[in-house]
Image (cartoon, rainbow, N blue to C red; front, side, top):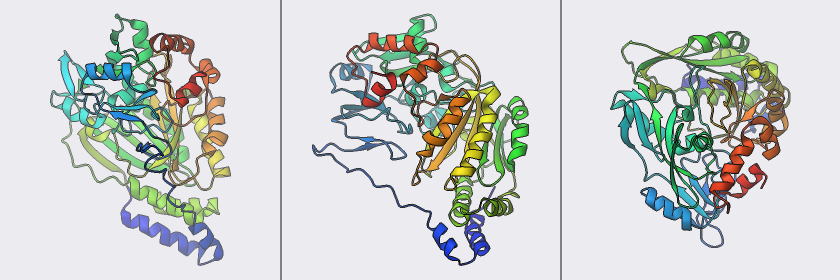
Length: 466
């Protein structure tokens, strides 16, 4: 959609607009330094663990990567608590942090077998690796999230999702799973065997045990046609509902301080595969950051420059197998808050979020992601009981993100939003009990399976009100 050359031009064009004034020099220094890193080891020599964005860290006493369920069960029985499991570290909350035992399931990965069109998959398998493994059998996951670096277990534990009004989050396609509890019991469950455990464990934040493997429903591995285009934000709002009804996958990004939105649609096709052009996302972000740095003092000038630089971007198209197109590389780090709202209030909440950012936070330049997800019946699924629309607000990893809680979260809550479990929020037990009808049932199963709280780190204790 936009070339690297255009990204470089953006800085020069904006500088020309404001000249060499002292104001220009001041706003050009909006780029903050690299956030300070925690010490690489603590006072006892334990190495640091950090999440992807860098805002969560801890110093585990023990790190381990069990090779099978037997080793995992022994570890859960005897490892130093709290015992937490980590995949790619793409959660922004404190779910994985522990000064006890940090478990990696990287040695427990791959497809272990098939039951018809359902694939048995180890929970340590990364979503990006699962695509080609399923494609080798002519099958695919029904949907994928924006990023595919996560482990399957981490994606299930946090209700990770893609977009598409008829497509469920990843846990919605789980037909059975195996859970290894804090006491070392290995429990199989599905809709008929231990059905309540199955309903609780599909989205469980790693609080009921560690999922070792899951059986996933798959679809035929079809080619998709991907189209990306930019248009005025108001037009994107007007057309969004129709596009969710029309396209297999549809999402759009509202871009604050530009009056623009970037749309992404995927549809099944029999067209021949084409070479996917290099992603222009980083160049797009470079332009937005340059405009923030140089024109952040004037919303009007910033929007005018954005329209001139980005408004005429040409649509980008590609055709390939779905697993190659649905996820995106995200090398630029950020922090994120995402809430899932009732369909009726999603776009109203989005407009209020954009207005609030443009009124109060001229430092923000990251686009706001807007998606739609079909309902399911997992107890702690944000999509439990009804379809939901997600709105995700991002902040560059070097920038402050406290405004998520002070400015954005109240808007989401006013409109009935439920938080993404892997994204930043400040809700606690009483708040969550009001949003999830089976919240107390989940807590009861948690107490039964882990009475001593061996899986509870400080973050989860606060979340559950313990």
